[in-house]
Image (cartoon, rainbow, N blue to C red; front, side, top):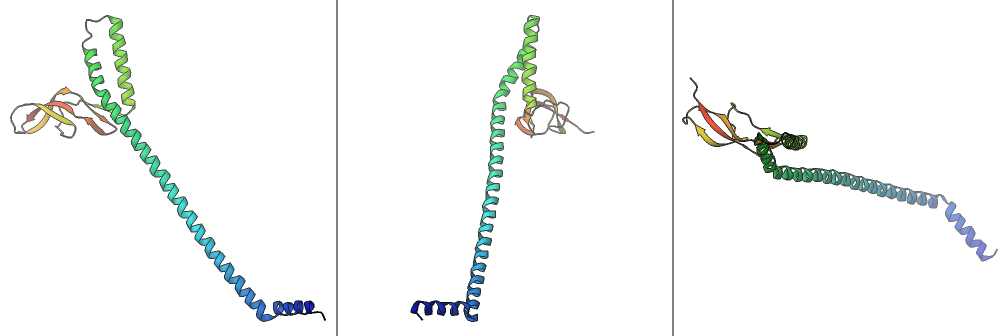
Length: 178
C-alpha cells in the first residue's frame, strides 16, 4: 500500500473514532455557546445604543421647544411697549378723521389678536385682592390696616402662557374688615 493511502486511512480512523467525534462536538458546542454569548452582548449593545439615541432625540426636541418658547417670550416682551403705545393712540383718536380712527383701531385689534393667539393674557382686574405675584403697587390709599385691594389700574400687566411677563401697576386701597 502506498504511503499516501495509509495517511488517509489514519485520518479517517481519527475522524471517525468515537473519542475524536466527541471532542469535535464539544468544540462545536463551545464555539456555539461563545457565538450565542457574543450575539447576546451585541444585541444588548444595539438596544442600549437605540435607547440612547431615542433619549437624545427626545432631549433635543425638548430643548428646541424650550428655545422656541424663550424666543417667543422675548419677542412678546419687546412688543409690550408697542402694545401700550397703540392702546394710548386708540384712546387719543376722538378728534381724528373717521377713516384714520377705524384704521388705527383695526391695526390695534389685529395686534392684540395675534398676541392673544400666542398666549398673551392681559392682567387688568380691579376690586380684587392685591397679589404681589401679578400686581405692582405704585400708589396707595387709606391706612396701612386691612386687606389690600386693587382700587385702580395704572398700567396693565401681561402674562404669557401662565408666566407673568410684566406685573400690572396698580393703586392699592386697604379695606378694613368690620
